Image (cartoon, rainbow, N blue to C red):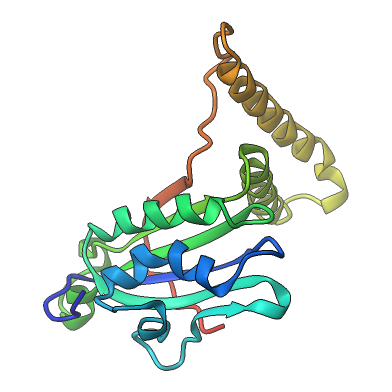
Amino acid sequence: MSSHNSPFEIHVHGQVALRVEVTLGDVQDALKPLWKYAGARSMADAVDSFYEDEPGIVFVAQEHLLQMCWTVAGDEDFRQALDEMCMNLNELAAVGAAIEVTFYDADFEEDEHQSESDSRDDFVMLFVGPNPAAIMQVQRDILVQDVVNLMERHFDGAELSGVVAEVDKLFVQRFDALVSSLEIGKPPRGSGGSSGNFGSGHGGGRKPRHLH
């Protein structure tokens, strides 16, 4: 997609560990929604980021890693490309992984008279993995880290084991509910949990671009 008149600069950042048998061709197919959105004819034509100081999209074959620090100009319809990409990466991922996507309001940066509250910036965390358990594991790890970081301002880390245990209980309940909902003839327990790719998303203050 051309950057001309695009309302957002969209930054995709994350690292996905891939199965050992995954090839460059597999990665190209999985990321096709992204490079097609960027108006490229192949992934090779789209791996470079909008910003020269960002590595872009890198497949490290020796380490079986997909690394993304890539910005593209676009609109809200980019979310559909992200959804398709995540579904594709689920088939290639060896473990669960988180992918951060930030929508920067391109017009906001050009007008110094606007207040930050006028910005249309948005941030969403996506999750991919070979199965729902792997996705929930990475979601759990990120949540625990966030909770611990917040509470360590007031409590010693050794005092937080009970809090971590409660978070674990919540994820166990969510996983049990998901398993139950997938078993024929058994209704889901509790509120259930989604095994989809989209995690928590929120707007808010502007976030710095990742440079590595």
